[in-house]
Image 1 (spheres, rainbow, N blue to C red):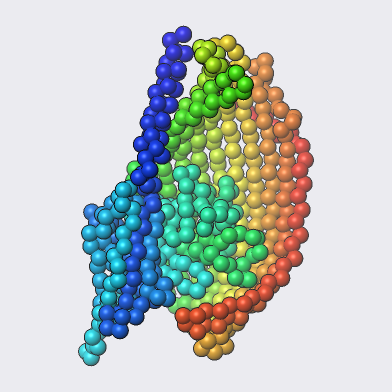
Image 2: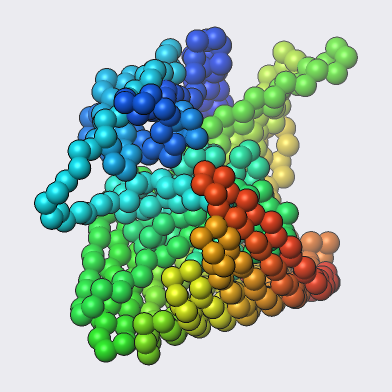
Length: 539
């Protein structure tokens, strides 16, 4: 009886806490979301008073100078930076040929979430006659035709995390509390690694969560994909480009990071380049432990009767991943290169949770209380092998050939325990087994030729094949024996083969850029779902 009273008392406390938070937030009309901040203004030439297009702006957190976002001006010099957390900031303005400018004392608060700095004039740099050595660093966010580029090396704040951490400050990208990524409000996003589809199992967000930020060179956000990309109907594309070391001699880089919620990561990158050969390798590690707690309450009214269901939940998750990569590059001359690369990425995830549910009718005392526990263990290794050839006839005229093979498997074992108290007694012990294999082969060739200063031609052919085999079994403990639930047994086989070719013509009359493309695809897709009993897992 004391144990039952404890669960009731815990649920009531958690429910009151959630209600109080709701009153503080949604009940106050002046309350703003902590990422609703917005900075705007206009950048002009202080001499002729004309707007400066594509001037870059970097937002720095005042207390530690960590990058907190940024953007570029439009064709009229207007600048807008959104999704800013509350705090004090410094805005740095850069434009080629002009002096750097800082805007200080920018404050974003829940009560005043918008800041407009008005019109700011930049001063041109005087002509230099002596010999100078020019060095430059890439902006965190760069804009090119059809895509945005996030340069990871310049985002110090996110180096200790994963790719999801990098995207939280990216324009047009939203990351919710569960790690789901949406682009311009839609979650239909295609994830690529070095321009190739990834076979990471667990969905698109799993790809981003598993890659440490310190192994990434840059991320391309393509919101308007051209005919070069597959016609999958996605809202946009996130292309994750991994680092490559190509300096002559022996080079190495070691990074170690630690953060809250037991978040740890590290990476080492090595390469040795001599006489046309480049040997390279890297190792990365990423782990964290996190969780969440919450309560829900539902009231159902039907005629004169009223029922109430309240739930208190807790979720805990532990994640560990290793990332090994090695390869060799051969460059017989300045124009040609051949690269062979292999990688191995094992991942282990432990997930657990408890849910306490309690139900009442009207003014009656508690009539039912259920505690459901779950624990999931997942083991997901991934293998990649790629062969790449490139021939640069000149800077804007080249031919590439790529062959890519990837294999993943994801074995998930989940245990469930359910205990009921008060009037109903129906304890349940269940478990599920999910085994998933994924194989992918891609062969493609692309050709690019800049026909003149303004016109460019792109074309290519591609073949891709993907096979996914998923087996699922559900078992229940009955009379001290594990018995399969035959209604839930299944084996799903998915087989996809796609042949494609494309042609693109583009014209660049800055700031106007025009592009027209044509893509033809032939898709053969086969799916078969059959019931298959899996062998019982040994206990």
